Image (cartoon, rainbow, N blue to C red; front, side, top):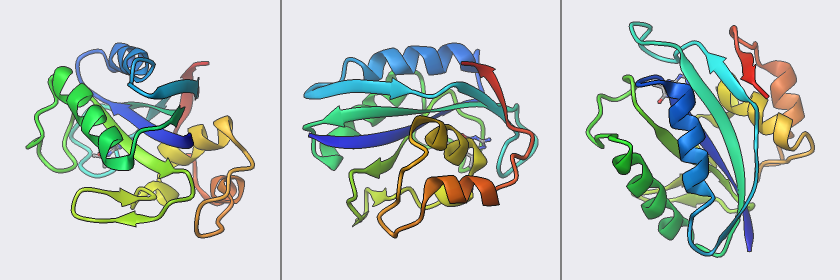
Amino acid sequence: MTIVYIGLGSNLDDPDVQIEQAVIQLGQLTKTKFVAVSSLYSSKPMGPQDQPDYMNAVACIDTMLTPIELLDQLQAIELSFGRIRKDERWGARVLDLDILLFGDQVINNERLTIPHYGMKVREFVIYPLAELNSNLVLPDGTNVSNLKIQLDDNGLFVVRK
Ligand SMILES: CC1(C)Nc2nc(N)[nH]c(=O)c2N=C1O
């Protein structure tokens, strides 16, 4: 089994409901045990500002799936929520499920970049991740609590514990 952290994001069609429903779907992944989910956070859009604020959370699972098997299942969930893969890059979306960390694995191939390429500079990832595990150390030795201290909260706030 491998501990995996997944970033959840939504800013369309009742984002809080999208996140809650997505968490239920994560609990139904094959060969996987659901471990925990962070509080629900509201965050300003990173990238184009002409879109609604986001709802973000981070979930933790313990899985026997391979990284690609997990990616396939997460992309299927996104599609089932109406996410069109050709969504405008950095545009509004109904649901984003990003694999942030897959154990201490470092993966770089055409389908997967793990750890997630932008996670260290995203308060809407680092704050919920530190909430779940303040002692977490990334594969490159970076401590998540130190990353949180260095990151401005950019107006991030907890909507629901
Ligand atoms: C468009 C981009 C980069 N901006 C985001 N901005 C925020 N605040 N939250 C997200 O989940 C998010 N996801 C994205 O994909």
